[in-house]
Image 1 (cartoon, rainbow, N blue to C red):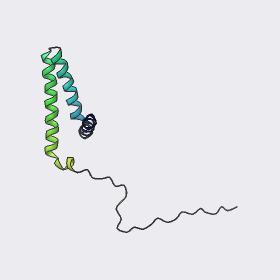
Image 2: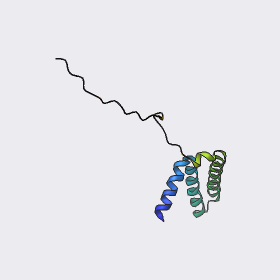
Image 3: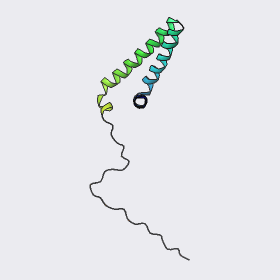
Image 4: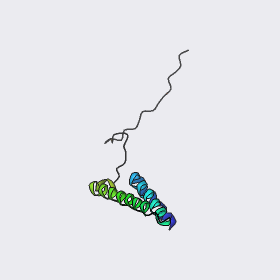
Length: 95
């Protein structure tokens, strides 16, 4: 169970690092504000969490295709023909 949660957190954090950071920061403020009964800090932390969730929701709603399919990077153009590369040969040294 812990492994599944760790994978999920890593995957979400890599997709949206800014909103994930804001959520973590806001949750820490909510916990500190709730434990110490500092309601101002609690409200600010709750605002951060809700704002980060709104940012993530708007990004998912605006670009749904980015989250569904990740295209592989291609450094070389695709080729129709499978032509093997030529063999490299050492040049004879002139002496």
